[in-house]
Length: 267
Ligand code: ADP
Ligand code: MG
Image (cartoon, rainbow, N blue to C red; front, side, top):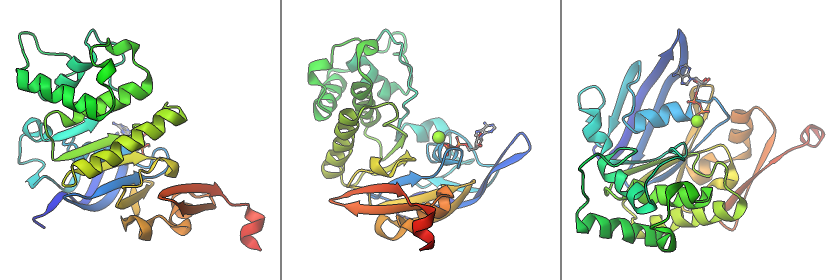
């Protein structure tokens, strides 16, 4: 499949004698905006690590941006991937603009003697503007709120003009206003960069941006369902994955999950 940005075939992963993933298949094409859903411990971050060329599977094949993991230098591949990791260090002596520039160097700190070009600084400022952070661009990283950090990390993920953006539970710890701003930023991105492919990991249906096109649901290290959002995000699939009766509703572009009373189910 030549237009596949991500192609996972029969992917297994073993750690300390335990199989964590049991044959995961997943194909993501250019311009698709996926959400990866599933309970805690389902294997979402592990799968995202393969998508981000962070680790190799135990068996099976992973193709990222047309390159097979195991045959390509991971570092080179990673430069084409923006990875929004909410566990980005909170302590840093850098300003917001400098943190965004570390997306170019692919590091947490700015390497000694590395100097951004004027064009690179302008690009960083432009992206900070896009995520509504112009007023904060010279602020020290530790003084930002969580919501501001999340938006700055999107700018960081985009500064090297990646072909693929991965977001692992980016809304963790955000209050409701910050979460909504964050989702708006993702929707704006979908409009401004329609060719960009994104994979967003969450375990909250309420956190799916309206621009989501596809969903993969994981449980116990296996894919429960994958495909277009309207086909996959159903009461049946979510109930199966979370092993709890959950009613899925879709209204004005947003999804909600509500626990169903067992008595009501049996009626
Ligand atoms: P999720 O992101 O869906 O919560 P993870 O991918 O982080 O799930 O983890 C899936 C399972 O694999 C969990 O049970 C976790 O404890 C286990 N796991 C993940 N990484 C490792 C590792 N490096 N060593 C041992 N167990 C791991
Ligand atoms: Mg995780």
